[in-house]
Length: 382
Image (cartoon, rainbow, N blue to C red; front, side, top):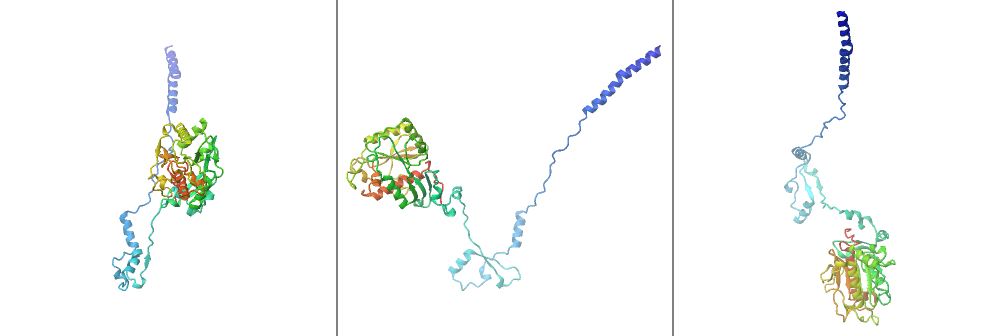
């Protein structure tokens, strides 16, 4: 009986206690076994190209090239050469001693070309009139109203094209408040005396037009008109001037007879004068600070020289002998004139007309080339 109980107990322990533990251990060992991950990256030591030290380079140079001769008289007889000729020859020629065993007749004189290295700027590489043979007609695609290329060595070598823009506004009488021939005559003079291709191309716009912001130079005149601008026109004018635009505005006066001095020119405080000052103050706010343009201002020397200031023939008998301006962030944005300079442009019989036309050229050239302007492409140079 006891033996039977012992055998059944031993069988139970072996079957239900010992054997399951052995199985779990083996199974646990299989689960815990993690094979080593494959090597995905392997560092390689790249063989470096052998470098030659400076000492080795110097030794190779000495072996490859013959040594220069300090005294030329050891090679040739120079007693018959003049000092000037010798200096001219030796300035561009390097003399070398022949290798050992060579005859004097086998000496080679190798000329060395002296070259001054030059480097073009990015703008010069982009636009080079001389190398690319590009004409102004090719540049005048209608995308811009002006493209100007300057020459730092010569201010009169400026080239490019320019489309003039005349501003029209309500209550303006073209026969009284403008000189109808002023712009055509001025641009004709520019075409004849400068390398700037100037034209009008029907550029008469209102201040409310979006095309205003493409014009690098706008021109407004008046005499007896009422300057009545809408809020949109006033806002556009202010934004235009702040964004790089240039305005030449002038209070003009006509002559009773052709060639005679105008009546009423050069007088401050006229109706048009007061109205335009008020408009500019509305458009520019705090930026509308008028100042007298001094005679040493670059405006008077941008193309022609006016050491004595602007021409005064159209303002004889008036009480003004200077121009005024408004600067925005250091850039001359407005030239305000009571001097009737437009008279020179519009009257073919005006006395001293040549200087008046030349000053018109200065106005346009300065407006197109000063930094910060709409046509500020002055970085393009020869």
